[in-house]
Length: 89
Image 1 (tube, rainbow, N blue to C red):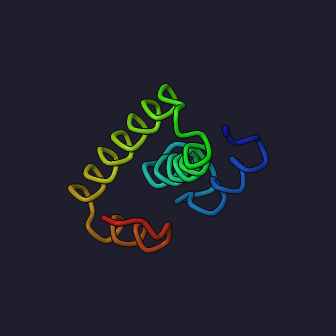
Image 2: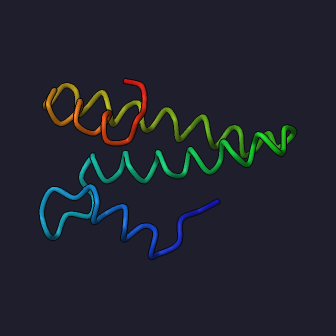
């Protein structure tokens, strides 16, 4: 369910704002979204995995806080990342 190194690097390259950017809000939201998607698929097959469900809810909350931060700082960055990732805002 976790991301391996090559997948993380591909996500960073796709969403970074400059060459050495590895921790901007866009990159963090993209990584969280990928982990959320994978964990959602796992939970559809394993309905009684309650500890993973709790971790999923924590990740969703963290992503929501990052998106609200981005929305307050720059509406354009927020709309771009929402459209790029295909998530509801």
